[in-house]
Length: 163
Image (tube, rainbow, N blue to C red):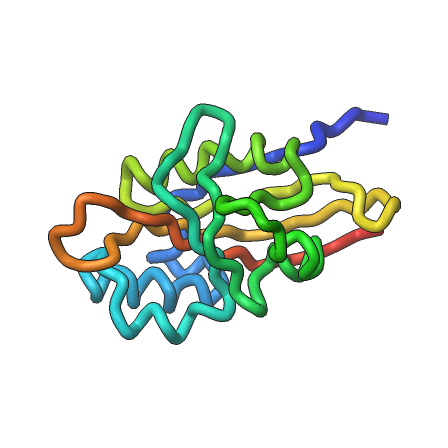
């Protein structure tokens, strides 16, 4: 039996979305972000339930701290609601290894303006091992025109969960 790595992340590039290979919800989010010129405007509100928002403070191997978790975002689907109530100022999902494996996508989004990729990962949820496959689109946005800081808007869509 071949051993598979616990985490596999593939940078598919925005061209994959432009060619119609991404989920249409992610394509709409990218289209709205492009139309806004990279500024968080009213178009972002349509996507908020599915997003998590993070600061632009990224270090190698560590994704930025999360400051907003939408009610229908993929992290809530995987990990539930309890972790979102942490008293810490910057949230992290409950899986530190997954966080480290996912960090590069945020760096790429901040460098290029956006990142689109596919991931497959093994985790332990409620004490049971599961394999999760998901698409993710991370877009770097400014809160307003000319703002010196940015934030990352993460839109993840779970494609499968196998127990």
